[in-house]
Image 1 (cartoon, rainbow, N blue to C red):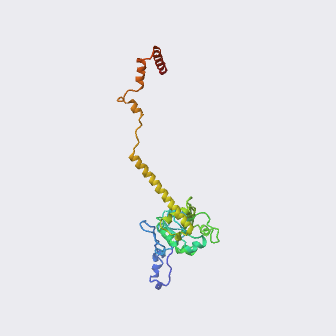
Image 2: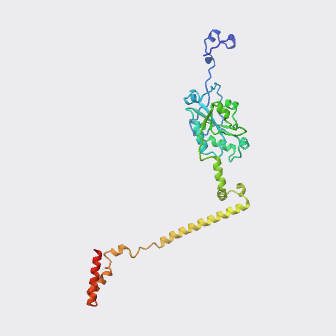
Image 3: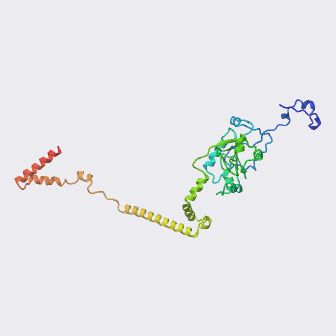
Length: 322
């Protein structure tokens, strides 16, 4: 450990004999005063201007191995993730969750690019910059939001926010005339990859809206939005309103038919079938008409031949049943 070696004792007011024995660290003890990770999610994350890191202690360069084992112990590892975050969705949230959980003790800073930079390098957004900033503040994994983040990370920006590592998916991000805007971060050993969530992206959501444009335009006209607000032409407005009226008429007709059916069923319930097996087998009912006919045939034959024929036919029936 280095010690002081100062000849002019008047400069510090300490005798030279003590200076030779006093460690330099004891003369100027600098503790880390970096903001700590949020312990509650009952309030939104602060903006960087509210909690900018004013720590005067030196931030030694860390390796990924050191950060994984919990070094340093006296401050959190400061991880940075940036993006546009338009139409904030589960894919964004999962990427930030991964960045937050890279190391045992992480402080996650999230940079959000402004409208000016985004429209210049990527294209028009659905949400403006203020809406996108606010969306990030309410994500549970975010400790701090940096507004108007740079498109390409400079050494000055990394030093200002005392960033240890940058988290992003490992797919080369070509933009602003560069094949990969994170190339210099990777070369410096400060890049930590995250995994993209397949099946969800801002472009996918916008594609769905464009595909089902007529459905959403009709719905919002019903909800009171004007054709001007929806950028709908006069002809399309009339067409959508006519389609809405037709749908309402169909719904009313269907409701009327359902109510009519219920009323008819209540007024004239279905009758039990007259020839049901229960009625035929009931002992309280009169004997089957077949039995008297057989008795009459046996008791009052029209001729001897008829009587013998009847007995013969009955015998044949008995034989068939056996």
